[in-house]
Image (tube, rainbow, N blue to C red):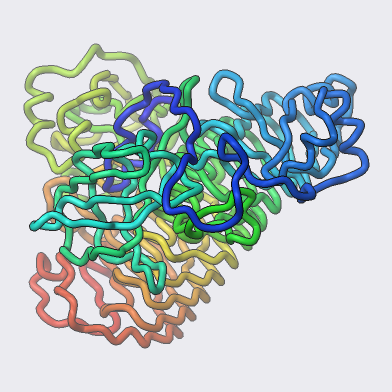
Length: 601
């Protein structure tokens, strides 16, 4: 997978995808805890998930019983076991419980492809990924259920340590790595976070590494582009790491072009980017899937300090879904980015003539004849939907279009057309439109409409709890605590060209506490930098939510026609923060529990 699918979320992508062999990833450091065997493996003790059926399985795989006693797992051809069951005609496959160390093949530890009406029961099964690349790929499956699997990494896709020195301007931090975490040479300039040692919560604002230097096998110097100056000697840090001598693919679990996929009771303790990433899927269900940092008592590797992070980026990310995913009773805590993101892609309109629209595709153009399309003007006005009748290639980006792009409020790779917005298409609509350059178009059937986020728990992360860019869905009964940004954000994003606007959306019965941003925020920024007029979002219900702690306003709604607010209990009390930028742009000077901008009944 290209870096296209690394979440464009306000941080840099991995600095390198190089294939490098790093040797022992654990090495020596701030040594605490039990004695270690040669090579850094944990001491011998009874296996965590032993099952009588496992003995025969291991003998068939050529693994001795003594090797099975390693607490951090036994080598296992899990792919071969499942493939054999499929070839034998089994539609319900039960994997014997055990902790299995799996070697990736072509950068994937396990692949489920083109399965139909299959159930895989993996209760008590733990997949230990031995390289920091994809754990599980689920591709073009229909009515597949996977239940009970636990996924972790050894070595981890991040490393941890303590700040032992600061430069005068605090932009440079010297780090001593803890025992049990990957060595200094594996660190990459990706997802750097600083935590308080007393509460083990995030210290302050994001830090973006500009340079990562290896000073010694267990020591780093990290130079950042700035921050809020709150870091201190003794603070704890975590930063992305890569141990992938055979190359790497992003995300722990990637689901592509699946229909009615069902993942139940999946536990995920680490990922090199997203936890669960689905794209081009239809009607997925995630039931009681859990993402959290692993407790020391349950960690198969002794470590000098407990884990600070679960995974490196988003927990649950859905892109281009026909029917949006259902996340029910799921948990996502302490990951490096958003809890949930449901979205599609906008493509940039550069010219219109009658029914014909010239479009620069963000990446692959995902608008097909017959699709209903969402149209948004450069000033943020959302037009009535139209239908695509014909789509034909129209060459590449022109010089005048490249100049226009360079002046836009977009992330750099879009603004410079570096790997994106290069290919042009002519889309013929079912009616004429007149739109200025910089307007947007997306397929209204490929943004995750019909989604549900219900009875989930999110928090402890650097960004948002739930980020929605889809319609005909609900966000209800969730518990969101301690996000650094908004708990619930409904917003298309011109900066990333992430679609779309929302309608027929219910945000009800959620409990939100101590989040750093506006707790419930509905917004729509225009391409020209303004606030979109009413009608960008349509028919929203925000009711029976409880907000405690955090900043005012507790609810901020922009650019909405058909808004119903009722029965919300709002006890956000912090009025000391800066006035939100959208309020300043609207000319507002004071905050209140609920603020509406450009809204109509």
